[in-house]
View 1 (cartoon, rainbow, N blue to C red):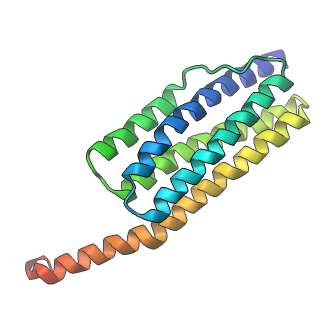
View 2 (cartoon, rainbow, N blue to C red):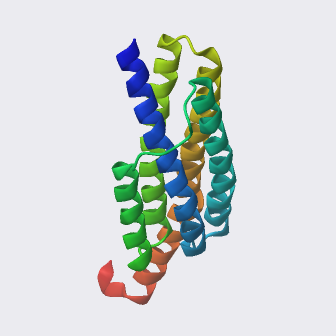
Length: 170
């Protein structure tokens, strides 16, 4: 189990850095979002992410470790993709896709930590991590709802307008 504990701490450090990176990226994503509902979702998730960082710090304490991050290259890459989408003005649908990639990475990471905390019989840590896992899943669901409602509807309206103004496209 000592190897699993080391793996757990290593992943915890990775996720701690990932969450810190996300707190820097979310305000930029909110600013770039066109639809108010998406802006609000990003702003709300920023607040949640700050609470998630605090929970990770509690988990470090449970394991007798100092809270510190290890560079999360995966998150760095996902955020770099999002920055490119913003710079290229790809729009809200692309921003949602980038955000969901981040959420799916977090869901996978937190899912592993929950399972490992259970194996290590660290129930308090497991409960804290489960709370965050649930928030990440809810954030992913919210992004899907936004995409399926307002974003796709707006895209369809744009395409319809273009068809009416450009009859050759029919």
